[in-house]
Image (cartoon, rainbow, N blue to C red; front, side, top):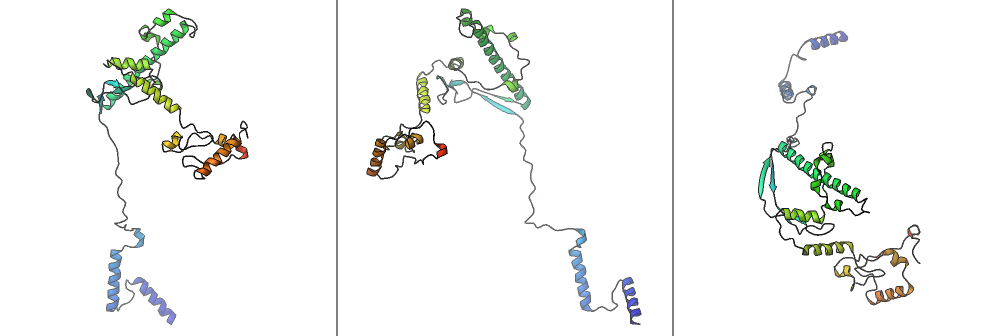
Length: 286
């Protein structure tokens, strides 16, 4: 009998919207809170997870740069005094203030650059053609030719060079200018007097760059070492000579000198360890 009643109760509970006929105040309040909670917090079946305000990522703004025109300032050439060419003097510079201004669109500027590069390429090809003709007339410089000495760029026409089949962008590159060419550019820009003292100063700078370091070989004397006097470590010591080619007399002098000073390596000398057997050179005297 109890089993029949239980079955009937489950059938009624499944068909009835309410699980029980009588409801107390606590049941009502709990059901209301449950209903309100279900309204505020939706069920998990919606898959909605509110994101925190603090954790919200800022929208990435597109950072694009747009150009609409190109402004070009033109300067006249002057003697530079700021660069060191590989040879000669007459360095190229520019005046402190521009003499003209011109604006281009992006397309116009690209066309202007291509035109300038083509002109420079034409001059470069004409110079190559002139040099090849001179070498041909003089048989690679072995024979004197008056006709070759009188040839100039004006004797080379555009028909002698193949500019149409040459890609300007692929072929164009900056070329070092010889001293004669630099002087011609300065005079064409209105420079009447070129300072000849610059040539001697540039020669001294080039020589100083070739001769780097001091003259120390076996040991460093801070009182005579130019590196030490300049406040830098000794750059002239040769580790091979200091390790293997030192004689007994020089070694004795070095030991006495160190003991009379501070009995340590001077601050201007870089202490170098001996070579390993694999690093020992064959041409050094022990």
